Length: 624
Ligand code: 6R9
Image 1 (cartoon, rainbow, N blue to C red):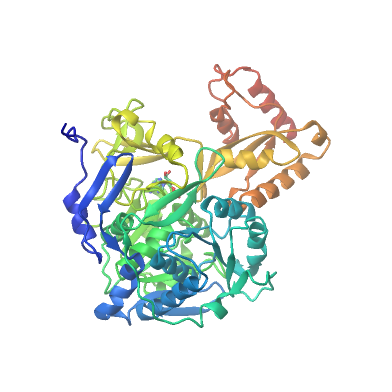
Image 2 (cartoon, rainbow, N blue to C red):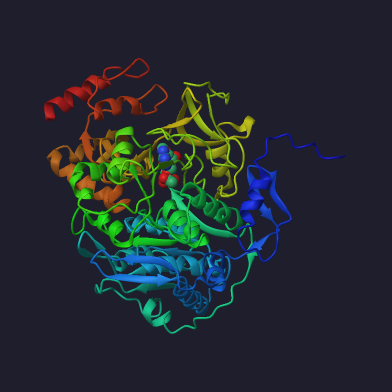
């Protein structure tokens, strides 16, 4: 019997083959896309390559060893210039160090580091050896680090003694030790000395970076890996309490990372100075600080600290100093700049800026205009880039030089990408209508699964529009009258706080793990600066009833910071007698959002007990 012909719409495979052809492959692929096992797909089947070789060595071999890869600037003002030749030496030494610890292709390495060059060396050394890395954002708590180490089964943790935060040296190793005390699978902890902070030390397990790495050979011959070899795992919040380990592989990811970086910013490796302000702990840092820019032989700026240390002009000063021509940041920072005032950027020479990028959440037209006026001299194109941890690289964005940009719209899918806005039955909506954003064709940098949980992968992304075979992004979107796409925010229980994804369920489970809390419901309330702010409603246990509310509230905020990390700390916690629930017991967050945003409460007819909202409102009025 001959197999049924595949009638599904296919992406432009020739386009993607051409893009992949810009990388160095040790062995050419035999098939561009294999989706015989959809929703699991394979790109560039049979191809073999080394991601680190593509990001580093090949540029040195082509005679660009003296080009700067990173102008790095530490928060206290120390600097380091790293050329491609030096990057190659550092990555080789780091790779040799990891080999000396007995790590072999396929072993997982957890990394929790500040924004220092060693973070890049560590990621690339892992890539070079085929060790999937799992980078954990520096602001995540020991408990969050621990669950990520356990889920990935990491054998090594790379961290630092401390990190600079707002002018202070904060401990890091002391915190990661709280995590590794419970993760016996971690055989070694490799520690970068950054702040000179005193650290607890476990003999035999803990190793100083400068002792182990610095004595290694600067030569290492990379080995090619299968295009589908896991490159990294990156945890992201979903709609349940447990973060998902999003898996990315090598060939397709690197192809799309490089291609989108080149096209979205119309990047010229010979003349541009590029700065992406993300942290390497997020996907934006992976794709647009490390893999995309380096694959394209970009000269980048990397900055360790916060934007207002020691003053609110720090970013503009850095742009002026290095002549940054492409600046890529998040709307939440743009709105913060707006709050600080336009006279601050006006003090600096920002005339080098050619393209401005935005990522992480919908950019409101006001912030878009401010960004273009005060950083882009009123003429630099603003590219609003929509994508996700799961998509690996930018999917929807206006291209510079394309049709006139619309403030607030990500506009159109990039070449090779297909996206649609559909209704809840999967039918495409018309112009001027809104619905759900789906990706109706596979793309090279798509996630290959949820680490260790195939069912969750199918369920989360592919079950909603299963009969159409669409990937469900979790975002609402709208077509305008020209058919351009406008993103409307999440349609699930995921909040977006300063561009960080935080699930309501995760914060709720942190809250109920506190002895005073009987029940909790969390919503994202809109906030002029951070996009959304975490607002929690809690019912206290009887025993806590006598404790003054402000004491309970501050204890709970600290508890959430400890359980997840300071980014998840609720802005407000409201103690309530009841929570609004449907008859099937589902919390009606919509009503709580009304309360959190100080609105009249909406339709309460589906509540099991319609008087609950009155009770909540009356209680809050009495307390304030
Ligand atoms: C890259 C990144 C993904 C979620 C995504 C959406 C929101 C990101 C956006 C945007 C509107 C944009 N999002 N970029 N919404 N316009 N340009 O941020 O990945 O942390 O996984 O977040 O962020 O809601 O679904 P990630």
